[in-house]
Image (cartoon, rainbow, N blue to C red):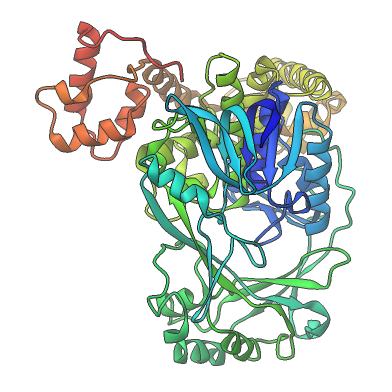
Length: 626
């Protein structure tokens, strides 16, 4: 049976990657279908109900700047907003919020329902229809066929997903939901190299059985900073989270039963995330510590479920019960759902172009954990990239490639497609070379003009951004024009070198001993600018000297990215290039010289050889547009 509608883009999976992919494709005008097991599970938070964090918060702001839905959903569900790393510079601040699961899911579903051109269809995608080697549609588990021109596959942990609790194995994509089996076979048949990765989650606890008098508390920020540019202020009530620690008794129980952990019994093949270790890993790797912190995070305003962040485990249920009894405040806690590890298939992301389209099957795009990443934010960012590019491909438009020089999204995509993964990939600010430029506070300025040019943002965002950008430009100019002498500064208790030189307000803000409030005392009328504008201008001023130096590096990076390499460049014909580098170049198929330079093991001599052949026109075929 065939669905009579021919879609431009079909997105498989309704998680964070799928929701963003469907939203992005539909916003560009593509006739889009989102196929998911259950409509009610769209936007579900399988693990920790939290959005953002170090590096991750930058991704959320960038998704929002491109018109995505994650930032707004976080603002409409966030119950404990905190800006991480406030003691450091703004470039590495990490916006984060604990979220109400039900409110988050409701926001995602409401936003998707409001988008024209988007149909949501319940069903299990089980196969791929191909015509002349390219995507032509999908087959559902009940035999229905859906025709389309591009497919975005966002299977999360469902691709041959297998839950482990001690020696118990449960085929599932997440607890109580069946895995996706058909697409693993489809991908293997098409020649994709699949690997196994692992992630995990802690037990869920009944908050009514926790002794809250025995834990310490962490407050939300008094001035919550929204994720979305479109959010003026946070309306959701803010709560506290509890904090407790494991004890030596906890560690002994885990050590005595380590052989019963699925991770340490040899039962699990997949590699887990190094930066989010299970409690078993913490005890084994950091045995000298007397305790490990646990954040007791409520899952909702009207939900008594508590997520004990920090004790992810694959130990048997009886051991989980036992070690919880040794943790202050949790002595009588009731487990609602046991913790577990989950293994799933993933594709080597070096099989993908930087648009996230597969090279083996034109029209097939992959996004999320199927590409070897971990985290809601990483998945959503990939969904945005894949959804936009699927729509652009169908429309015959030029592909959109995010650069390392303009976004954390570009950093992540480049890392994945160039280097692949040996463990689940997680975003950190340290992965970006240009993090002074790629701040969470300037995501709109960096990316919204691109979104406006593409046509993937609504009119209200376009108008609000235009007003903001004009005001910021005016404010920066105003700050640079206003000047004062050291003697004049002293009248306002601002200490400067007595060198007779006049400094602008913009220059003053670059000094560590001068704050925005000091400048406003000198020139009170600057208060006419919105606080958001003034704060952005002050941060730009603080980093101005460094940004000027960095701009030269960015210009060189952009120049290198502009030196395109034809998609069918014959690396095998290059005399003087080692077989090892030939194989790596053939596998990655770099889009540009800059992309090629970042391949592991690449040498300046090899790059010079490729450049020489390009200049001589040895390979004189059309360069790729993405």
